[in-house]
Image (cartoon, rainbow, N blue to C red; front, side, top):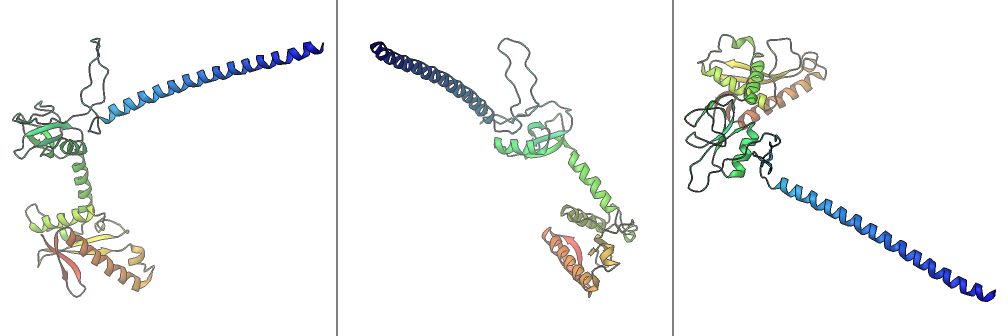
Amino acid sequence: MIMGTMLLWPAVAVLGFLLCTAVVVALGASSTARYEHARAVAGEQAGRAAARASGTHPAGRRVAAAPAGGGQARPQPRAVAVAVRPAGAPARAAVATPGAAYAWWLVDEAGQVLAGPFDDRIDADWAALSGGLAAVSVHGARRPDGGVAPRPSPADRAWLAELGDQLDRLPEDWDALLTDTDPLTTLVVEVAAALVEAGLPLHDAAGAGTSGGVCLVPETSTCGVLVSWRTHDRMGVQLSRGEVALEAVQELMDAALADTLAELGFVVQTFGASGVPLVTAVR
């Protein structure tokens, strides 16, 4: 009996060792398989990322490869590539269909199309930069002679509409002066455009505006434009912060307007004892 017990325990120990070894081997094989699968997936993702990064244009490639079986290709997002001129070869447009809709084009110094059309100016400018083209972007329609008939872009039309709304705020002093041929009209439009571009709206003198803004008044003796700041009615009329604060703000804002317009290329002088900025010309 004692001899049988002594022989049984070594057999149990050996059997347990074999079972543990089998479990370890199985787990190792499973872990290795999962690792190989994960590495394969990571390799495929890296390959796709490298393929996407191979294009230099942020809009992607213009032409997609056709399927090998001759089937119909899947539709791709529309993007335009650069028609880069090879060494010694004449420049050709990416799409040279006369009468195309208004779009952005890259043209050379002679006004001839090098590449296009592009949906927006950013795409056109990026194409010129990445393709090393000595070209400028022009919005319009392609002409049969290879040039472009310029037309205002949607952004230009929106800007002109906004500028027109600002010019409608001019005081009545301008009503008898604004003509298409008057140089003072040209000057006030230039001044208003520069101020609005700088984020400074005009005071709505023609309406019931109370929020303040830039006042533009004609000065016919010098053929100039007087520029001053109008505070909100709460400060300027109700004196919510007192006369001292009003005078200080008025002086600071007038000086800021003079400096801003001088930086934007206008000839600025001071007018009268109050020192109001006077714009007389564009440098």
